[in-house]
Every structure is written in structure tokens, then in C-alpha cells.
Image 1 (cartoon, one colour):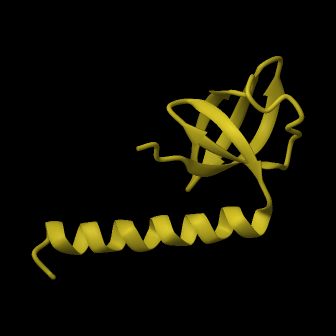
Image 2: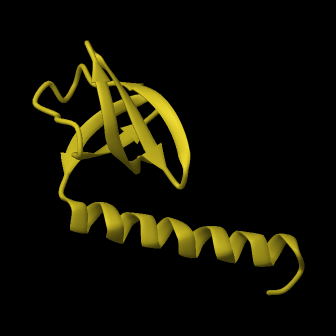
Length: 80
């Protein structure tokens, strides 16, 4: 099973993009999405952008990740 997270493309240098997710900046390969542009959102798996998604889809995915993190944090703190 693959898990990918939505990230916003901030900068592109060759086949590497600087992306942001939750304030964290990461460099990822964009070889699989050659049409990506600065400002696009991409799904990132294992340091590779695997698809371009629209802003609404990216925001929906981020919302799901935030909900999951809240549940996991509550469980870790014993607040289930």
C-alpha cells in the first residue's frame, strides 16, 4: 500500500521541486510529473511527486491527514 501526501510546489530547479506541507519544506523529484508548475499541488510518496492534484483535492487530503494526526495524538496521550 502506498501513502502519498499533498504538497504545494514552491520552486523548481531542473527535475527537483521544493515543496511545502504543514510548514515543512522538502525537495522532491518531479520526473514523474514533467508538466508540474510552481503553485501546483502534487501527491508525494517516498520523495517523489507521483501526480498533480487540484487545490481542492489537496486541501481535502490535508484535512484528512490533520484528522488522522489528532486521533493518533489523542490515542498516544490516552484520551481515546
